[in-house]
Length: 58
Image (cartoon, rainbow, N blue to C red; front, side, top):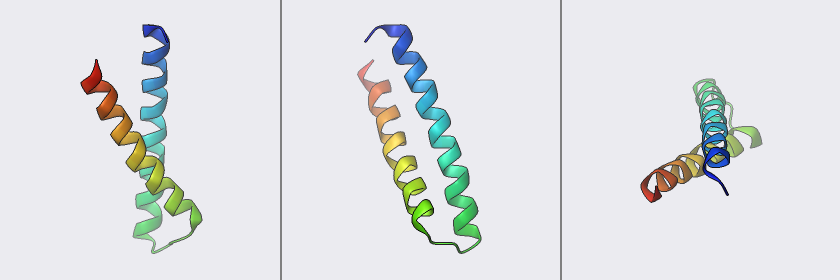
């Protein structure tokens, strides 16, 4: 994968993590514990780990 495509995917993943975090914390603050909240939490957790791992690798 070339460098420009990698930057684009990192930005896209960062946007996904931010949106998942907004959904997760909005639902948690409203005491809504449904499947979407769990999926948002997983996306937020794994996306953050991947971004950190890719940043360290570069």
